[in-house]
Length: 454
Image: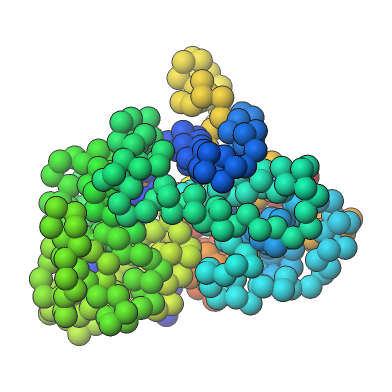
């Protein structure tokens, strides 16, 4: 495979919506998601009311790439070889000695299925995007609460957590004003949604003018998608895309066959009967990448049109688009913003009112680097003192270089580049940092030890 990647060489450019084209104010949206799940557990399932209050710095617990070992009530940060680097029982960090005692220096028992991106299991849950993450903090606090009251050894709260997620995010929730999440975003979109920068809108138009086919593929239902797009892109948002696919139910969109997951048309946001094939551009619901690709062949007149897909979830976007569809993938990784670890000099001299947009919110500005969990990219092996030999890549970091073409902090980071800009791609023969743009995370650079907070 060639070493460089360019958008100019792609025929089709596809986008996820949430946390990709539509970015959120993270502290506010995290708090809303946490509250919407907690409210359900307390009012509907009788959990402890203490879950409803949140200490200002508690969102520090949220770190992408964590795996919840459901039966044990433990959260794990995994190394690329599947060994456990850090762990917590509920919210309480385990010591290096405890980690070694419980998990040893061997591959975690479910690593094989986790690393195959299998997510539907009663044994564990992988937290890999900002919609899920506040649920990790809630589950950890549920474990704390159950320990305090019942002294449990095996945990059975997961079914209630799934019910809370389904209650808030089910397909009819937006229309019915059900749950806490959708009504709140509807009523206060500016509080939660960041408007799309002009540079990105201009770039989308530039892609279209260059003859690219633009796709929007989101697992959000059409009514929520419309609210988001009107708010972040404007009322003319449909003009940016040739094909819009909502309720795509990723990763199934990529892994399922046309029989398992046919496309459906929409009328007033209600799904209609299944389509036997996809014949023309437009707005559709559900579907599968096989029939989509057949339509793209027709639209481009090419046997093998080249598709690139931008998304923020390794599990739902990047892995399946690469693994099942062999598309190019661009991973949106906001952690690249937080991994700098240095306050730029100019920020020091800014007047106070210009500093941190969210400081009045009391919740720390986006939780890119968790003090409790350390760097998203690297960590020390537990229990070893001689630090030189013991830094290893995390499993999350390994997935990025394995399944992404490139990784960027946001669309804005590349919107001003010419379309024929040549990015160095991740590949087996290039360095571990090659595919990060505009620069690799500090933790991956040689002799940078400062990010491994103990």
